[in-house]
Image: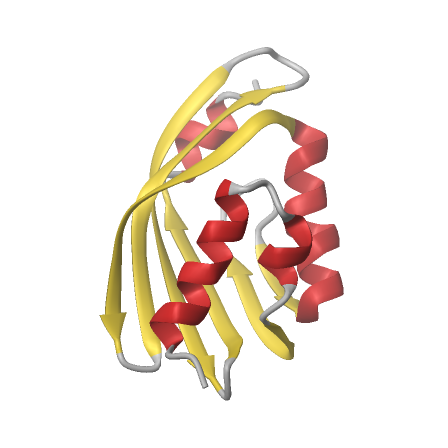
Length: 129
């Protein structure tokens, strides 16, 4: 069985390859995925389908070239913390943004059970106006 660190690293490796199936592969059916209040797709979504529709698909509809660049991945046993940077260009306004971000992951039984995002939502929303 993979460690929590390995499960989360596999998600980011898939992200780097633009492999959506790989990004969603380890999300448990009961995973609680929380996007920060104030973020364009804020809320808590449960399971792979809700995460895909309400996060990845929603961001793709609002932004071009949406990227997450991983800077550090910290192993805390069943929890993993990632730091990095979001960048994108809003489709409607053409404005770019760059925002620092922290992701906190909870993994159990080789599956992602929890995800929580912390970012500067103002920089993201500002690009939309």
